[in-house]
Image (tube, rainbow, N blue to C red; front, side, top):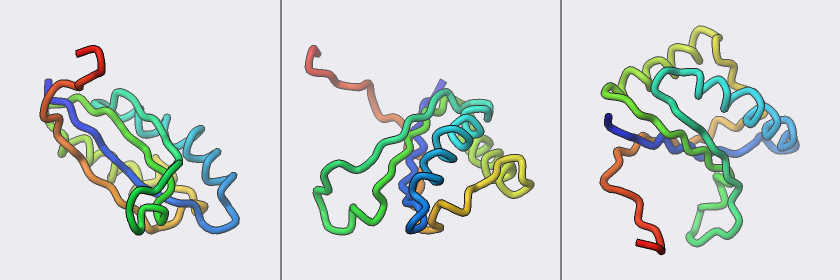
Length: 112
């Protein structure tokens, strides 16, 4: 079955970082992995910017998706947000980068 990564870069509204992080970890990630085809989710915080502008989106979420129909998964994500089944916190800024990436090959590790 085809595997994909949904990559989302976000930031909190100024002064609401704690609320944003609690909502994202405890509410949003479980809501997204409840969508059929979404297998897992993990968040990261920017440690070391390596290019200009990177710090504008200091949080990264990576969702592992396995499905023959990634468009259906994305459509379900949008539908749940639109009809209120998935609530988006107002502590998250609307400045978001998101994209779905297709897997191009097996992971390479230092033991390979």
